[in-house]
Length: 113
Image 1 (cartoon, rainbow, N blue to C red):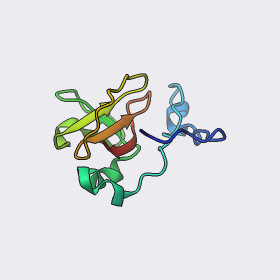
Image 2 (tube, rainbow, N blue to C red; image 1 turned 90 degrees about the vertical axis):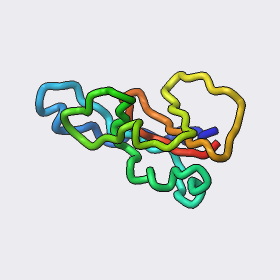
Image 3 (cartoon, one colour; image 1 turned 45 degrees about the vertical axis):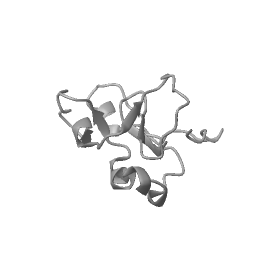
C-alpha cells in the first residue's frame, strides 16, 4: 500500500526542546514518500498534505498541550487510520483516505485506497 522506507532513510534530528526540558527526545517524523497531492484528489486527501507530521487526535480525545495537531473529526468519511502494526484488509476503495500514523501518533502517510 505505502512504499517501503529506503534502507538508508533515518529520522531527522530529535526535538531539541524536549531534550532540553529533561523529557526524552522524540525523533522528528519520517514522512512516507512520495506524498503527491495530485494523487490524493480522488479521496480528498490533498487538503491534508499540510497535516503531515502533525499529531493525530482521535475522536473525543484531548488536544495535546504543545505542537500542531489534526482532529479525527475533521476527516471526511470514508477514511481508515493505520497505526504501526495494524493488519490491513485487502479491500480497496479509491474514495477512501488512508491516514498512516507513526509510533508517536503523528501523520506520516496519506494514500487513497
